[in-house]
Image 1 (tube, each protein chain N blue to C red):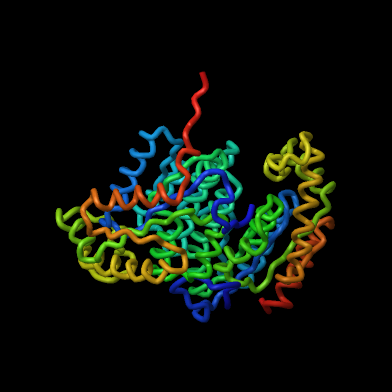
Image 2: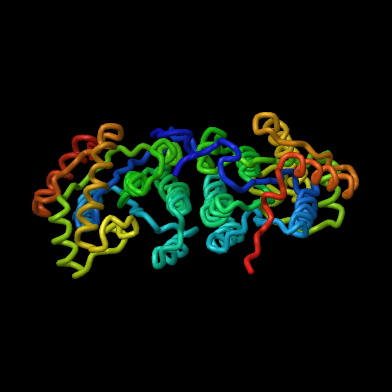
Length: 229
Length: 226
């Protein structure tokens, strides 16, 4: 079952986006997906914390504030493992372009901020292969915070990092929490070969950069879906 | 006390003044019966006890029960689901009880989970690191019963062999009797390998309930002095 850190060992290609909330990564991944689909390529999209099987437990845990750093980490890893075993891996084997909105680095960053040991975390996610391309949307902290907090949204308890006891004010807590996550991302970017995208540039400029990069790195015509009939 | 590995963020093992006794063994090994006897005897001596077991967490036990009904979880997902269940109980039941000076009686612990994962192909070092969050118990009693004896007891009790305790998901045999024997042998082999590393106190569970209980009680006295 174990770990394979070689890139490109499956026929498919794995593209992940990482970055802070409000970094613009989901918008960019959506536009990339539309472009690839309209080119007639085999594309699959999956996002963090979305396994139906695990969702009930996760939301119960969050709602009732039952989660500790360890169980928070484990339940998100379970969610990821379910998507990995049932979708990501088989689709990579089947030659898909698999697009992941957040990947294991999200856990490395968030859970480390919550106090989990990083060697434990890296082992925990050791079953997962690293993406062929990891796009890191490097948006200045203040810009990302402004995008999220601008509308004075209702922040969820864990989203704001309230479980860390950083501040009694959810907005202040969110700011500190995101700042710490940002530090973790910056510390990881070299080790895991993140490709940085300037998340403060206009949407169109970013998307052009993303598309150019993907086209240069991946032989896209290979991933055309062959329709029978 | 101490952890096997990195432990749990925010928990200081030196604050845990209670004791942790683990009982391991297959279904039909007499494990639960022995657990009750031990509990009675400890309470009789004036010790406060707390019982824990697998699949009893508030967080995911319902989901795990559901998942057990259909074979819907991948191997890694299932491992992690059980690890989540374990961690939840460790943090919300075991550790608070140990802080309060209770004797925690664990009906199965990480060893069963690790053995199950490993015979299903999980990487040993992955599993070991995963359960680095666990506390090292004061005593681990492993009630060992031969697979044929286990079959006899399970059939007498339920007239059928449990799908998972027979390892039917492994495809060892389509016949539950044969599968049960092969699967329990694999598990016992894993326990034998773990024995050296984790220092189980193995008890011959083929004997009568009373003599097994006597054996366990004397080991509890020897090692824990209670």
